[in-house]
Length: 236
Length: 236
DNA sequence: CGTCCAGTTGACTCACCTCAAACGTGGTGG
DNA sequence: CCACCACGTTTGAGGTGAGTCAACTGGACG
Image (cartoon, rainbow over all chains, first blue to last red; front, side, top):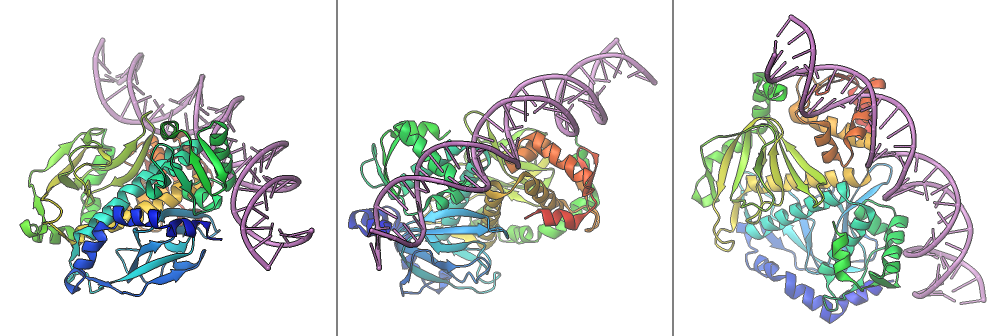
């Protein structure tokens, strides 16, 4: 049940996230006319925990920004193996693709609220300019994906879990920076599928971090970072 | 010595690559005026095998298209572990980034010739449109990076090597499609760093493919695909 | 108070890594 | 033209980090 939703609906956290990362979205609203190929569709949509927002192969005429909650995008192999590409929180944009079809699926990690944007989809030759904001968003996603490839291809389990904790801290950033409190919205399985590990390895590694006094696991989803710099040192 | 360069300079291969994948670059030339933020800088540049084209952290005011040869982009961890992000061949574009700094480094896998393009780098607020070609190039790179994450996070060594062979076939595509001949420009170490494996595992897996009559290893860098569909079946 | 599901922990396995030796091949120089 | 070298590759033997399978724990909720 959405402990994590409650956390994210918490005004302090939500407002900070919005202020910190939503500035460009305002300008996105400003230029949302036909010349930029963008059409906000005002109606907010809600998705319950675990629900699919869109599937791989579906029409990609719409993308989303998150008001509250957490979303994951993922790919599957035919036998069910899953790779989570990214987690998105309030203020993030997701589901923006070049072609007409989504190459990832998106699911609600927690109950969440999103705003759909319609992409003006004329033929490529006519509509050959894009707002720079969307372009730089795409490029930032690309840089992130490349960084993640380094993690998946070359880092140990300990390094991966440390990197995940640090990444999630910088995304959600509750509490002061020296001893941040982490509220995980996702299961160990989600974390494992993001890091290319198994849920048991994630669990064991977190336990090991706790034994070594790097973190304190209050509940499975609530973690205190006790030694930030040691955690950063683990991140190769 | 550039067996691989010779191969790529082979008129048939080079022409096919150019014809097949360079169409959008021509239009890129067409619209290369100040309004698109693009400035081709006509001078071709040559890089010898193994030479760095640019380094991580360097100024990213210039990107490149490849005339001949093969280029790799990669990231390093402090202890020397390497992850190769992509290989690029004639007709490909690389080194295009959002910020002012490259987040990857680029090196010549074989002797190669590239054309630098200067990116008109005004402040983001003024220069807020980009040619759609570059945008869709970025989005295609993103989709590719996400596919690669699935490989790195969730596929076995056999699946990875099979995927690599198929990807390289579709990139270079010499010979007819049913039994393509593969000319590898890169070492086993390069392949390993691309696939998140060790060079020994790559070598063993290729030998295993040969024992199973999926391929025939003529020389270390020249491989015949004898059973394309079996290879495709291995690719999860 | 019992059920359910996520998480933890342990014992064992195995796919891939590490270390090391041998092999080929192409280039160099005598 | 051949001997030699350097370097990339192959192959083997053995080790290990993470996976697998399974039992147990502990909140959350009815």
